[in-house]
Image (cartoon, rainbow, N blue to C red; front, side, top):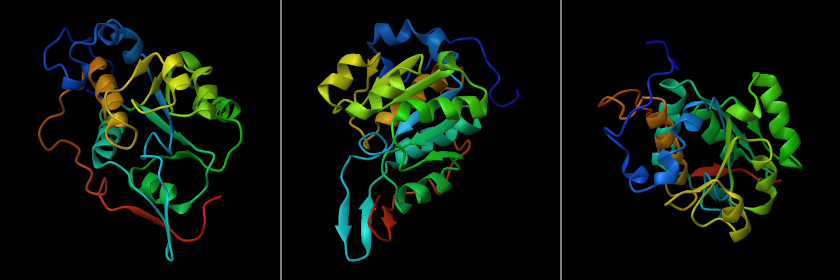
Length: 213
């Protein structure tokens, strides 16, 4: 089956653990199956929101589980990915390069217009976009998306606006949960053992030379 081909929506077999007992999420399988673009905030969503500065620069921590989920999402389901952040720095660039994320927007202003430009570039509309963020500037992503997701430890205002809130915190498996939702809805869960491993989805922190913008 060609990458990204839509399969019939599963009826409960092999349900990911993070979806169990979540009736609203299960009622949204068709909407999840329609998603072709996932737009992610970085700080607080892909990371735990902390930046550690040292004489060598700064360090951010990324979850290997999130990375593997994003690899499966790209390779198996053909879902496009965009990372959008108000900060600029080499750790995000390094991590995005490892995971082959082509739409990387760093050091940008209001995120709504940035998301619209990405959608225009890819030819994907809001109705096929899922976005995720943890802080108030990320609410602009919600306005341009069919579904908006917040990590468990997001700001209260963001959780209130979100269609769904993950069980995990940002930088600690929250993005992986969303990947599993999408893979399941599209009929690609669970991946076969050993299927599409990403060796560089690695665990080492990303180091930044110089201060972030």
